[in-house]
Image (cartoon, rainbow, N blue to C red; front, side, top):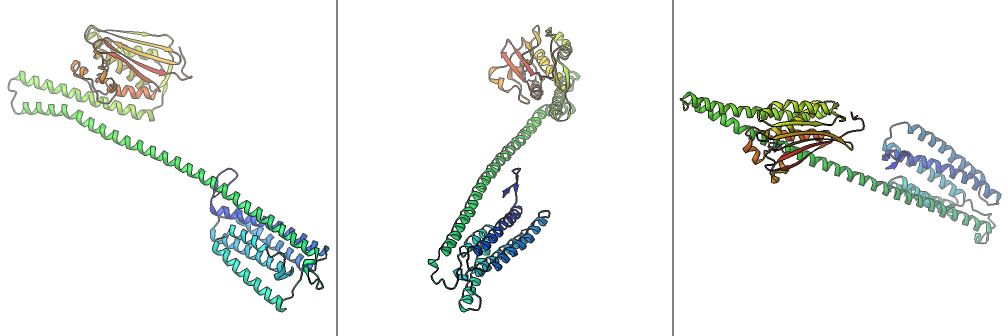
Length: 465
Ligand code: ADP
């Protein structure tokens, strides 16, 4: 994978197109060198035929124009691997042919340009498969051999680097210089090409490493999401189990009562009335449980569907306290409210917020014996609203404190004190407080009373007053 300038990964096809472009660009440079070489050898008085060499440079330039046009044309089209590889092999073959012709006109088997085949093979290896490199190397070698034999036998004209009278080329400074220049060009080219390949490989390694890290990150995320889903599923199943369990016992006692009544066991009307009253109590309990379960579901669902609004907390808490006054009066409990006048508004789903405070106040009245007190205070301090409900009730046993927010949980002393209860109120309250970004704090002492405090952060848009 290669990278676009914007850092996006590009696929193999696009990289091939990128490489063909690079090949065309390099070839312009080679054409320039060929032209300069042909002219220079003529000026320096080499015996190489300048005309054919220049023509060769022009020929390479001509087919490079053709290739450039094809590359530009294909850039706008969807890329397919096979034609692109064919195109690259065609270019390589054309280059080898040009190089063979160049070698022929610069001395055939005695040409100083023979090493150029090496770096052309290196470039070839960069672009096509190893098999194709062998194919190209094979046919070029065969042509070179045939050329050498043909030139030696005189079937093909031989173009010696120097005039015929120079019998020992090693004594010719020009020849040595030409060998030197070709060797330097070969070395430099090989270094550039090999350095380029190594650099590219290193970059590729880094990219691969990044991709690997990204994949690992994704895998971890997927794993976490999977674990979360599994936990949700487990929670759902245990909730169903709890619900069935909770509903089964009142229902079966109603059934027992009905059986007793219909079987004629309770002949006296008082006995029958007592049994039916018991069944009614159980059905009330079931109804309360179903209502709480519906509330819990509503609170869970609504957080995603219902839009919150700005809710003035002061009047809301006052309303909730007012609504519990009758129940408090019935138990001779003094229920008071002390609400700060500068309470801010908060962004909340109105019914849910109201239900949260109602649950705490109703519980306080429920779990406080006759003649006790329940005090509700609401204040705003340091970006938080604190609504505290303090009672002089039965308290929560310390070892059960951690469980009171769990679904269907009722503390042992609560069950003794008050038979009616579902154990769902505080779970609903906790969910609402969580949704509001807040929490419920509890301090309690058995037999002395408890304080349940709702702490809600006020967003900057919440306006005190
Ligand atoms: P419920 O009141 O229906 O039992 P809740 O979920 O509202 O269910 O409360 C769970 C438990 O927390 C209660 O059963 C009780 O043990 C304890 N609790 C809640 N509020 C108080 C309170 N004000 N005083 C003492 N215990 C409380």
